[in-house]
Amino acid sequence: MRGNGTDEDAMSERRTRELYYEDGYQTQFSAQVLSCKEERDRDFSVILDQTAFFPEQGGQGADRGVLGGRSVLDVQVQDGVITHHLDGALPVGATVAGTVDWERRYDFMQQHTGEHIVSGLVHHHFGYDNVGFHLSEEETRLDFSGPIGEQDLLRVEEEANRAVWSNLPVLVSCPEPAQLSTLSYRSKLELKKNVRIVEIPGVDRCACCAPHVRSTAEVGIIKLTGVMNYKGGVRLTMVCGLRALKDYRNKQSCGEQISRLLSVRQGEITEGVRALQERLQAAESENQRLSEMLLERQAASVPGPECRRHALLFVESAPQGAMRRLVNTWAGQYRGLAAIFSGNDAEGYRFILGSRTVDCTALAEVLRAQGFRCGGGKGYLQGSAPGSEAKIRAILQEQ
Ligand SMILES: [Zn+2]
Image 1: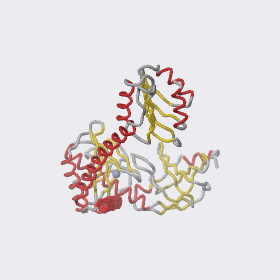
Image 2 (image 1 turned 45 degrees about the horizontal axis):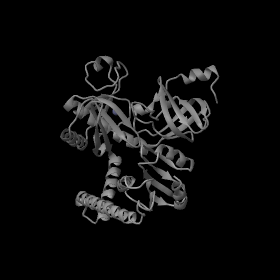
Image 3 (image 1 turned 45 degrees about the vertical axis):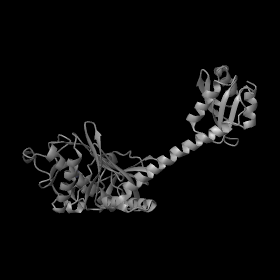
Image 4 (image 1 turned 135 degrees about the vertical axis):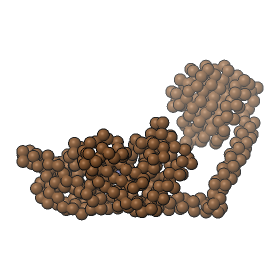
Protein backbone atom coordinates (compact mmCIF):
# COMPACT_ATOMS: atom_id res chain seq x y z
CA MET A 1 0.00 0.00 0.00
CA ARG A 2 3.00 2.31 0.23
CA GLY A 3 2.84 5.03 -2.39
CA ASN A 4 5.85 4.71 -4.66
CA GLY A 5 4.52 5.86 -8.02
CA THR A 6 5.03 9.45 -9.07
CA ASP A 7 1.38 9.66 -10.22
CA GLU A 8 0.18 8.69 -6.77
CA ASP A 9 2.52 11.18 -5.09
CA ALA A 10 1.30 13.93 -7.36
CA MET A 11 -2.30 13.00 -6.58
CA SER A 12 -1.71 13.02 -2.84
CA GLU A 13 -0.37 16.54 -3.03
CA ARG A 14 -3.73 17.79 -4.19
CA ARG A 15 -5.45 19.78 -1.52
CA THR A 16 -8.44 18.05 0.08
CA ARG A 17 -11.72 19.93 -0.23
CA GLU A 18 -12.94 20.67 3.30
CA LEU A 19 -16.65 19.89 3.26
CA TYR A 20 -16.98 20.70 6.97
CA TYR A 21 -16.17 24.36 6.13
CA GLU A 22 -19.13 24.49 3.81
CA ASP A 23 -21.69 22.67 5.96
CA GLY A 24 -21.16 21.54 9.54
CA TYR A 25 -24.32 19.42 9.32
CA GLN A 26 -23.12 17.25 6.43
CA THR A 27 -22.38 13.77 7.75
CA GLN A 28 -22.59 11.69 4.55
CA PHE A 29 -20.21 12.18 1.65
CA SER A 30 -18.34 10.28 -0.99
CA ALA A 31 -14.73 10.84 -1.91
CA GLN A 32 -11.91 9.47 -3.99
CA VAL A 33 -8.98 7.82 -2.22
CA LEU A 34 -5.82 9.68 -3.27
CA SER A 35 -3.39 7.66 -1.19
CA CYS A 36 -3.27 4.97 1.47
CA LYS A 37 -0.21 4.07 3.51
CA GLU A 38 0.23 1.57 6.31
CA GLU A 39 1.82 3.60 9.11
CA ARG A 40 1.96 0.72 11.59
CA ASP A 41 -0.11 -2.33 12.45
CA ARG A 42 -3.82 -1.55 11.99
CA ASP A 43 -3.13 2.15 11.33
CA PHE A 44 -3.59 3.19 7.71
CA SER A 45 -3.27 6.86 6.72
CA VAL A 46 -5.64 7.86 3.95
CA ILE A 47 -5.82 11.10 1.96
CA LEU A 48 -9.03 11.96 0.10
CA ASP A 49 -9.99 14.48 -2.58
CA GLN A 50 -12.65 15.82 -0.21
CA THR A 51 -13.75 15.14 3.35
CA ALA A 52 -16.41 15.98 5.91
CA PHE A 53 -14.16 14.75 8.73
CA PHE A 54 -12.90 17.68 10.81
CA PRO A 55 -9.23 17.11 11.72
CA GLU A 56 -7.83 17.85 15.16
CA GLN A 57 -6.81 21.51 15.27
CA GLY A 58 -7.09 24.63 17.38
CA GLY A 59 -7.44 22.55 20.56
CA GLN A 60 -10.44 20.62 19.27
CA GLY A 61 -10.41 16.86 18.84
CA ALA A 62 -11.02 15.26 15.42
CA ASP A 63 -14.26 13.73 14.18
CA ARG A 64 -14.81 9.99 14.28
CA GLY A 65 -16.90 7.79 12.00
CA VAL A 66 -16.68 5.31 9.17
CA LEU A 67 -14.89 5.62 5.82
CA GLY A 68 -15.18 2.94 3.15
CA GLY A 69 -16.30 0.45 5.80
CA ARG A 70 -13.24 1.20 7.98
CA SER A 71 -13.32 2.95 11.35
CA VAL A 72 -11.89 6.46 11.44
CA LEU A 73 -9.66 6.44 14.52
CA ASP A 74 -8.24 9.95 14.13
CA VAL A 75 -7.92 12.78 11.61
CA GLN A 76 -4.87 15.04 11.51
CA VAL A 77 -3.90 18.02 9.40
CA GLN A 78 -0.36 19.10 8.67
CA ASP A 79 0.76 21.70 6.13
CA GLY A 80 -2.76 21.66 4.70
CA VAL A 81 -2.78 17.89 4.15
CA ILE A 82 -5.64 16.10 5.91
CA THR A 83 -4.82 12.53 6.92
CA HIS A 84 -7.47 10.04 8.04
CA HIS A 85 -6.19 7.26 10.29
CA LEU A 86 -8.19 4.08 9.64
CA ASP A 87 -8.11 0.58 11.08
CA GLY A 88 -7.86 -0.94 7.61
CA ALA A 89 -6.66 -0.19 4.08
CA LEU A 90 -8.69 1.42 1.26
CA PRO A 91 -7.94 0.89 -2.48
CA VAL A 92 -6.23 3.93 -4.02
CA GLY A 93 -8.35 5.52 -6.75
CA ALA A 94 -11.61 4.04 -5.43
CA THR A 95 -14.63 6.14 -4.53
CA VAL A 96 -15.65 5.50 -0.93
CA ALA A 97 -18.53 6.58 1.28
CA GLY A 98 -17.88 8.42 4.53
CA THR A 99 -20.15 8.87 7.56
CA VAL A 100 -19.26 11.26 10.34
CA ASP A 101 -20.27 10.21 13.87
CA TRP A 102 -23.06 12.77 14.28
CA GLU A 103 -23.51 12.40 18.06
CA ARG A 104 -19.91 13.37 18.63
CA ARG A 105 -19.86 16.07 15.93
CA TYR A 106 -23.03 17.76 17.20
CA ASP A 107 -21.83 17.59 20.81
CA PHE A 108 -18.61 19.34 19.73
CA MET A 109 -20.59 21.90 17.70
CA GLN A 110 -22.66 22.75 20.78
CA GLN A 111 -19.63 23.07 23.08
CA HIS A 112 -17.65 25.00 20.49
CA THR A 113 -20.40 27.51 19.71
CA GLY A 114 -20.94 27.97 23.46
CA GLU A 115 -17.23 28.74 23.73
CA HIS A 116 -17.61 31.51 21.11
CA ILE A 117 -20.44 33.07 23.12
CA VAL A 118 -18.51 33.02 26.41
CA SER A 119 -15.23 34.17 24.82
CA GLY A 120 -17.01 36.96 22.95
CA LEU A 121 -18.70 38.21 26.13
CA VAL A 122 -15.48 38.00 28.18
CA HIS A 123 -13.65 39.92 25.45
CA HIS A 124 -16.42 42.51 25.29
CA HIS A 125 -16.67 43.08 29.06
CA PHE A 126 -13.07 42.68 30.18
CA GLY A 127 -10.95 42.90 27.01
CA TYR A 128 -9.33 39.54 27.72
CA ASP A 129 -8.29 37.12 24.97
CA ASN A 130 -9.05 33.44 24.85
CA VAL A 131 -5.43 32.19 24.96
CA GLY A 132 -6.11 28.47 25.27
CA PHE A 133 -8.88 26.12 24.18
CA HIS A 134 -9.30 22.40 24.62
CA LEU A 135 -12.34 20.44 23.50
CA SER A 136 -12.55 16.69 23.92
CA GLU A 137 -15.23 14.16 24.83
CA GLU A 138 -14.30 14.64 28.47
CA GLU A 139 -13.84 18.37 28.83
CA THR A 140 -14.21 21.87 27.39
CA ARG A 141 -11.54 24.19 28.76
CA LEU A 142 -11.04 27.89 28.09
CA ASP A 143 -8.08 30.00 29.22
CA PHE A 144 -8.41 33.79 29.45
CA SER A 145 -5.59 36.32 29.67
CA GLY A 146 -6.85 38.08 32.82
CA PRO A 147 -8.59 37.41 36.12
CA ILE A 148 -12.41 37.29 36.38
CA GLY A 149 -14.18 37.38 39.73
CA GLU A 150 -16.95 35.07 40.85
CA GLN A 151 -19.75 37.62 40.46
CA ASP A 152 -18.50 38.62 36.99
CA LEU A 153 -18.47 34.97 35.94
CA LEU A 154 -22.08 34.57 37.06
CA ARG A 155 -22.93 37.64 35.00
CA VAL A 156 -21.11 36.22 31.94
CA GLU A 157 -22.87 32.87 32.38
CA GLU A 158 -26.30 34.47 32.57
CA GLU A 159 -25.63 36.75 29.62
CA ALA A 160 -24.34 33.78 27.61
CA ASN A 161 -27.62 31.95 28.23
CA ARG A 162 -29.59 35.06 27.26
CA ALA A 163 -27.69 34.93 23.95
CA VAL A 164 -28.87 31.30 23.62
CA TRP A 165 -32.51 32.22 24.32
CA SER A 166 -32.29 35.04 21.76
CA ASN A 167 -31.87 32.44 19.03
CA LEU A 168 -29.16 34.45 17.26
CA PRO A 169 -27.83 33.23 13.91
CA VAL A 170 -24.26 31.93 13.71
CA LEU A 171 -23.00 33.52 10.49
CA VAL A 172 -20.02 32.23 8.54
CA SER A 173 -18.25 34.26 5.85
CA CYS A 174 -14.92 34.53 4.10
CA PRO A 175 -14.48 38.26 3.47
CA GLU A 176 -12.14 39.65 0.80
CA PRO A 177 -8.86 41.02 2.25
CA ALA A 178 -9.99 44.64 1.70
CA GLN A 179 -13.20 44.08 3.63
CA LEU A 180 -11.43 41.99 6.24
CA SER A 181 -9.03 44.82 7.07
CA THR A 182 -12.00 46.95 8.14
CA LEU A 183 -13.39 44.28 10.51
CA SER A 184 -12.48 43.82 14.15
CA TYR A 185 -12.50 40.19 15.22
CA ARG A 186 -10.89 37.81 17.68
CA SER A 187 -8.08 35.78 16.17
CA LYS A 188 -5.17 33.70 17.42
CA LEU A 189 -3.31 33.86 14.10
CA GLU A 190 -2.32 36.84 11.97
CA LEU A 191 -3.91 35.61 8.74
CA LYS A 192 -4.47 37.94 5.83
CA LYS A 193 -6.33 35.77 3.32
CA ASN A 194 -8.80 32.87 3.32
CA VAL A 195 -9.91 33.96 6.77
CA ARG A 196 -13.17 32.37 7.85
CA ILE A 197 -15.13 34.71 10.07
CA VAL A 198 -17.76 33.32 12.43
CA GLU A 199 -20.11 35.96 13.76
CA ILE A 200 -22.82 35.87 16.39
CA PRO A 201 -24.38 39.33 16.04
CA GLY A 202 -23.83 41.50 19.10
CA VAL A 203 -21.93 38.74 20.92
CA ASP A 204 -18.81 37.63 19.06
CA ARG A 205 -16.84 37.88 15.86
CA CYS A 206 -13.96 35.44 15.53
CA ALA A 207 -11.71 33.84 12.92
CA CYS A 208 -12.41 30.11 13.18
CA CYS A 209 -12.39 26.98 11.01
CA ALA A 210 -14.43 24.54 13.10
CA PRO A 211 -18.06 23.45 12.58
CA HIS A 212 -20.67 25.46 14.52
CA VAL A 213 -24.42 25.17 15.07
CA ARG A 214 -26.63 27.39 12.89
CA SER A 215 -28.25 29.28 15.70
CA THR A 216 -27.36 29.97 19.33
CA ALA A 217 -30.63 28.29 20.39
CA GLU A 218 -29.09 24.93 19.42
CA VAL A 219 -26.46 25.37 22.16
CA GLY A 220 -29.30 24.61 24.56
CA ILE A 221 -27.70 25.77 27.79
CA ILE A 222 -24.28 27.11 28.79
CA LYS A 223 -23.05 26.19 32.26
CA LEU A 224 -19.66 27.17 33.63
CA THR A 225 -18.59 24.27 35.82
CA GLY A 226 -15.20 25.29 37.15
CA VAL A 227 -12.72 28.13 37.47
CA MET A 228 -9.11 28.24 38.59
CA ASN A 229 -6.33 30.82 38.45
CA TYR A 230 -4.08 30.05 35.52
CA LYS A 231 -0.97 31.92 34.29
CA GLY A 232 -2.18 35.30 35.52
CA GLY A 233 -5.64 34.71 34.09
CA VAL A 234 -8.33 32.11 34.58
CA ARG A 235 -9.05 28.63 33.26
CA LEU A 236 -12.75 27.85 32.93
CA THR A 237 -14.49 24.58 32.27
CA MET A 238 -17.97 24.55 30.78
CA VAL A 239 -20.69 22.26 29.46
CA CYS A 240 -23.32 22.97 26.80
CA GLY A 241 -26.31 21.23 25.23
CA LEU A 242 -26.79 17.52 25.86
CA ARG A 243 -23.53 17.44 27.79
CA ALA A 244 -24.99 19.99 30.23
CA LEU A 245 -28.15 17.90 30.57
CA LYS A 246 -26.06 14.80 31.34
CA ASP A 247 -24.02 16.81 33.84
CA TYR A 248 -27.26 18.00 35.50
CA ARG A 249 -28.60 14.43 35.64
CA ASN A 250 -25.36 13.21 37.19
CA LYS A 251 -25.35 15.97 39.80
CA GLN A 252 -29.02 15.39 40.56
CA SER A 253 -28.37 11.69 41.00
CA CYS A 254 -25.45 12.46 43.35
CA GLY A 255 -27.69 14.82 45.35
CA GLU A 256 -30.46 12.20 45.58
CA GLN A 257 -28.09 9.45 46.68
CA ILE A 258 -26.39 11.61 49.31
CA SER A 259 -29.81 12.74 50.53
CA ARG A 260 -30.95 9.10 50.90
CA LEU A 261 -27.70 8.03 52.56
CA LEU A 262 -27.90 10.86 55.10
CA SER A 263 -31.69 10.71 55.46
CA VAL A 264 -31.96 14.46 54.98
CA ARG A 265 -33.85 16.57 52.43
CA GLN A 266 -31.85 17.38 49.25
CA GLY A 267 -31.72 21.08 50.12
CA GLU A 268 -30.04 20.21 53.41
CA ILE A 269 -27.33 17.80 52.27
CA THR A 270 -24.50 20.28 53.01
CA GLU A 271 -25.65 20.56 56.65
CA GLY A 272 -26.06 16.77 56.68
CA VAL A 273 -22.48 16.17 55.52
CA ARG A 274 -21.18 18.75 58.02
CA ALA A 275 -23.02 17.01 60.87
CA LEU A 276 -21.63 13.66 59.71
CA GLN A 277 -18.10 15.13 59.67
CA GLU A 278 -18.52 16.39 63.25
CA ARG A 279 -19.78 12.99 64.39
CA LEU A 280 -16.82 11.33 62.66
CA GLN A 281 -14.32 13.66 64.34
CA ALA A 282 -15.92 13.02 67.73
CA ALA A 283 -15.85 9.24 67.11
CA GLU A 284 -12.20 9.41 66.02
CA SER A 285 -11.09 11.26 69.14
CA GLU A 286 -13.10 8.86 71.34
CA ASN A 287 -11.48 5.97 69.50
CA GLN A 288 -8.06 7.54 70.11
CA ARG A 289 -8.85 7.95 73.83
CA LEU A 290 -9.99 4.33 74.15
CA SER A 291 -7.01 2.98 72.17
CA GLU A 292 -4.61 4.85 74.44
CA MET A 293 -6.46 3.53 77.49
CA LEU A 294 -6.28 -0.01 76.13
CA LEU A 295 -2.53 0.37 75.49
CA GLU A 296 -2.05 1.51 79.10
CA ARG A 297 -3.93 -1.57 80.33
CA GLN A 298 -1.86 -3.86 78.09
CA ALA A 299 1.34 -2.13 79.25
CA ALA A 300 0.45 -3.05 82.83
CA SER A 301 1.01 -6.74 81.91
CA VAL A 302 4.70 -6.13 81.06
CA PRO A 303 6.98 -7.25 83.91
CA GLY A 304 8.68 -4.30 85.65
CA PRO A 305 12.29 -3.11 85.24
CA GLU A 306 13.28 -4.69 88.57
CA CYS A 307 12.79 -8.21 87.13
CA ARG A 308 13.33 -7.76 83.36
CA ARG A 309 16.07 -6.14 81.27
CA HIS A 310 13.77 -5.46 78.27
CA ALA A 311 10.22 -4.12 78.08
CA LEU A 312 8.51 -5.87 75.13
CA LEU A 313 4.82 -5.51 74.32
CA PHE A 314 2.84 -7.04 71.45
CA VAL A 315 -0.60 -5.59 70.64
CA GLU A 316 -3.04 -5.87 67.72
CA SER A 317 -3.11 -2.14 67.10
CA ALA A 318 -2.23 1.05 68.91
CA PRO A 319 -1.96 4.77 68.12
CA GLN A 320 1.57 5.70 66.99
CA GLY A 321 1.80 8.71 69.31
CA ALA A 322 0.86 6.68 72.38
CA MET A 323 3.30 3.90 71.40
CA ARG A 324 6.10 6.45 71.06
CA ARG A 325 5.34 8.07 74.42
CA LEU A 326 5.27 4.73 76.22
CA VAL A 327 8.52 3.54 74.57
CA ASN A 328 10.20 6.81 75.68
CA THR A 329 9.04 6.33 79.27
CA TRP A 330 10.19 2.69 79.34
CA ALA A 331 13.57 3.53 77.75
CA GLY A 332 14.26 5.67 80.83
CA GLN A 333 13.27 2.84 83.20
CA TYR A 334 14.59 -0.41 81.70
CA ARG A 335 18.27 -1.31 81.38
CA GLY A 336 17.87 -2.91 77.93
CA LEU A 337 15.34 -2.35 75.14
CA ALA A 338 11.85 -0.86 75.22
CA ALA A 339 9.73 -1.90 72.25
CA ILE A 340 6.08 -2.09 71.21
CA PHE A 341 4.98 -4.21 68.26
CA SER A 342 1.56 -3.70 66.72
CA GLY A 343 0.12 -6.25 64.30
CA ASN A 344 -0.19 -10.04 64.19
CA ASP A 345 1.85 -13.14 63.36
CA ALA A 346 0.21 -13.65 59.96
CA GLU A 347 0.72 -10.11 58.56
CA GLY A 348 3.77 -9.04 60.56
CA TYR A 349 4.27 -6.12 62.92
CA ARG A 350 5.05 -2.39 62.89
CA PHE A 351 7.25 -1.39 65.76
CA ILE A 352 8.83 1.41 67.74
CA LEU A 353 11.91 0.64 69.81
CA GLY A 354 14.02 2.76 72.15
CA SER A 355 17.02 2.31 74.43
CA ARG A 356 19.38 4.42 76.53
CA THR A 357 22.02 1.68 76.68
CA VAL A 358 21.96 -0.38 73.46
CA ASP A 359 23.63 0.95 70.27
CA CYS A 360 20.59 1.16 67.98
CA THR A 361 22.68 1.61 64.82
CA ALA A 362 24.38 -1.75 65.42
CA LEU A 363 21.05 -3.28 66.49
CA ALA A 364 19.48 -2.12 63.21
CA GLU A 365 22.08 -4.14 61.29
CA VAL A 366 21.29 -7.26 63.35
CA LEU A 367 17.53 -6.81 62.84
CA ARG A 368 17.88 -6.20 59.09
CA ALA A 369 19.79 -9.48 58.82
CA GLN A 370 16.67 -11.10 60.33
CA GLY A 371 14.40 -9.54 57.70
CA PHE A 372 13.34 -6.44 59.65
CA ARG A 373 12.92 -3.16 57.77
CA CYS A 374 13.91 -0.32 60.03
CA GLY A 375 15.45 3.09 60.35
CA GLY A 376 15.97 5.55 63.14
CA GLY A 377 18.66 7.37 65.05
CA LYS A 378 20.58 7.41 68.25
CA GLY A 379 18.55 5.56 70.83
CA TYR A 380 15.51 4.71 68.73
CA LEU A 381 14.35 2.58 65.79
CA GLN A 382 11.07 2.09 63.98
CA GLY A 383 9.92 -0.04 61.10
CA SER A 384 8.30 -3.37 60.33
CA ALA A 385 9.11 -6.88 61.41
CA PRO A 386 8.19 -10.19 59.74
CA GLY A 387 7.45 -13.43 61.53
CA SER A 388 5.88 -14.43 64.78
CA GLU A 389 5.87 -12.82 68.22
CA ALA A 390 7.83 -15.79 69.61
CA LYS A 391 10.57 -15.43 66.99
CA ILE A 392 10.82 -11.63 67.46
CA ARG A 393 11.01 -12.06 71.25
CA ALA A 394 13.78 -14.63 70.83
CA ILE A 395 15.82 -12.30 68.62
CA LEU A 396 15.45 -9.34 71.02
CA GLN A 397 16.11 -11.35 74.20
CA GLU A 398 19.60 -12.03 72.85
CA GLN A 399 20.40 -8.30 72.73
ZN1 LIG B 1 -15.45 28.43 16.09
